[in-house]
Every structure is written in C-alpha cells, then in structure tokens.
Length: 235
Image (cartoon, rainbow, N blue to C red):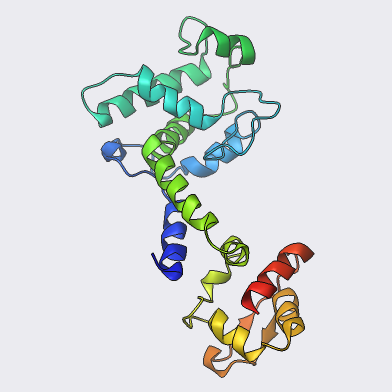
C-alpha cells in the first residue's frame, strides 16, 4: 500500500463508529453517544479504544465491558443481541444490584458494585452511550484498528508525526493539496532546515503560489523533539 493511501485509510479507521449490522436498532438520534461517553463515563472507566493504560482503575475499561457482553448475551440476531444489551444497561446503570450483575466474582471484588447513576444520567443518555459502545468497541473494529496501527508504525517516525499533528490535512508526501507536497518543501529548502522548523512552529503565508493565498497555521504547541523529527523527515 502506498504511503498516501495508508494515511487516508488510517484516518478512516480512526473514525470507525461500527461496521456490523447491529446499527439498525433505533435510538434517540439527537443524542451523541460518543460525547456522552466522555462526559458521563470517563471519570471512572477507561474509554480509550484500545485502552492506553490500566493504572489505578476505578471500573472496568469500556472495551472489556463491550467484549464481555458479546459473550454474556445470546440472541438469534445481532440486532436482537444489541437491543438486549442496551435494555440491560439502561436498567442496571440506574438500579445496580449484585443479583443483576454479569461481572465475575473477581471483577466485583476488584471494582465493587457500580453505584447508581440516578440524577447523573437519563435513560435516553444511557441508551445512546450503550449503543455507541456496543457498535464501536467490537473485536472486528479492534482488529481493523490494530492492523492500521501496525501499518502506521512501519512508517518513518516523522511521517507518523505528520499524521498525529494532522499535517496531512493540507499536505501529502508527493501530492499538492492546500499546501505543497512534503517532497516539494524538502527540495526547496534542502539547505535550510531552519526555515522548515520556523514555518511549522510559527506558520507562514505567501511563499507558495500554488497555495493561492492559503496560510500555514502555526503549531505553537508542538514539542521541540517532535518539531526536530518532522523537520528532519521533510528535509
């Protein structure tokens, strides 16, 4: 796969919101499950996908919950399974009890019983969160993410950072977009890496006629180490 194709495909994978047929279950479309997950659940649950760390956990990572629910709930169709999962979570989050818990004894011992979230979240919000989690945090989506990450990590570190800082929104390695290609920049400033660093750090405007007046925004928050790596890669 060409690097430019990989950059695009990696961006697509990062925005996955579910790739199975369970999304046919109706939910309140006015509620953003992804945003609510961050607002309502992030203080206790690790909501990264996949989880980035497991230090000082107060509750199981959302990915673990979603994966376990795939095994705990049985149904004839994916849509039926999803509906059963959502219905359980809507009731359990507001009225948790040991009798209802699907957690193993070890998990209950480690984390304790989840406190009731009455007054903190509505049933409709729980439904939106659960729908997002169970259609996004799936083994299939994890496999796609891991595959994309493996391809990403095979790239030069400077190219990886160009993805991290979204440089590819305006540039490609060998193709003009809003701005010149990285190859063009490297060729023009092959004896002036300081100019590349300065343009990244402080921005620039009017240097490239092909940009038709578009300005390069400053990346003030980039670390000195990352700035050095990206600049050398372009150089």
